[in-house]
Length: 191
Image: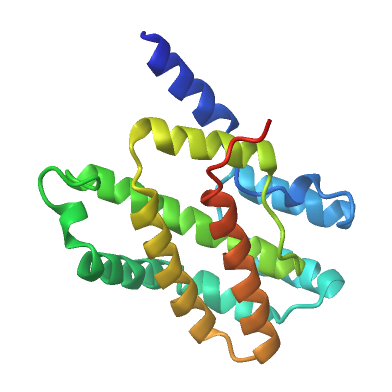
């Protein structure tokens, strides 16, 4: 195995988006639930949502609705990106062949899953700095088109926010998505 392959495998192991499970300001039980769901790469259960929202306050039905519509929201975001940047999906494009595009949609679904954790926990800053740095480096090394990913996430944010009925919820999700996109697009190396 080459040094590059070893480094990519190492980055895959430490790349992590959510930092909620390490947030000592959150209730211990909430952190444990988020940690378990994140390790299993799954949505929260209805009971988990109910318990988290009892502590943090957001609307249970909005969180359930986002989870229920997550596949459709990612599909619609994909359509937006394909219309806006079709060259990404053509031979020679960063999301060609289709396996690369499918990995992008899987990542978008995972981002939405973690955004929903943050929404349930009523947190706008929810990422794990070292894990996000590893994810950014991984994306750079494997040639993920960050511009295309940002566009897909912009569509995903717009579509998700439209689904939420309360002004408070829309504002919260706007801030959550803004935080995620800022963290994904950090390019300056800190010394």
